[in-house]
Image (cartoon, rainbow, N blue to C red):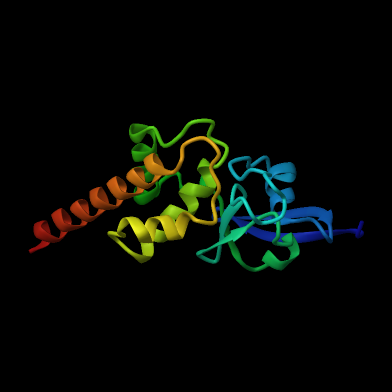
Length: 168
């Protein structure tokens, strides 16, 4: 185990100084030092996607990312999206569609889906399935999760169209 170091991290818009081992993963720091527990420790090998968080606007596996590598970068966890309209639409759609069962994969699914709808406002089913392919769910069979992302994306597109019409 490496010696302890001080890491200055920007987490959910707040600068945090963490005293942790040099080999601590971002997931370790988020869960154990900062009590941000939305990202889950699943496979701890970067395969399941339960630990997905955003680093500088890109989804990454927290279990594979060293905390020290995030110095000077913006880390956003699910908790950091509390006021985000797209995330709120995705969360609501997941609940309404029944896309949440045990909930273990949900945080990673939501982070990944949020990134998808930010880049592709109205993704089709193959695009959704492709984007979510790195996030494993053992409960739902993905159908309801895909439906939730589709519904949320359509809702967000309608809201954007309504705002555009109001401006014109």
